[in-house]
Image 1 (spheres, one colour):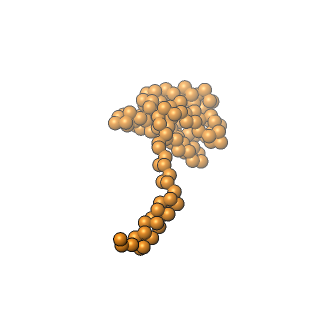
Image 2: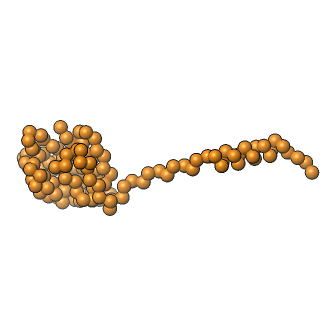
Image 3: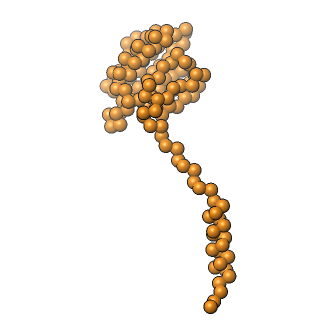
Length: 131
């Protein structure tokens, strides 16, 4: 019977590499729309988010998220909730079809809430611009 020491060495090294290799880290899945997210308290606790907000992205100057609310539901939500938090509406909502924005002011700070509805995914993307 023939002996193949080099082949045995390669097989042994391959097994060692496989044994020491780390399993691939799982890819993060997007946050499901059913999981409500809230902004961190360090942003502005007086800026409400819809209960179904998902894909939340927060920076010092912007809060962006998606929601399943329609444009009309979103405008009603912010018109009501912002007033409850002491914000004043600046003018009428500017809306062009499924795209629009709302302006609110409080203590000299103006907040712009821009939104756009996607009929394909039935979601509304929202971006709140902070000063």
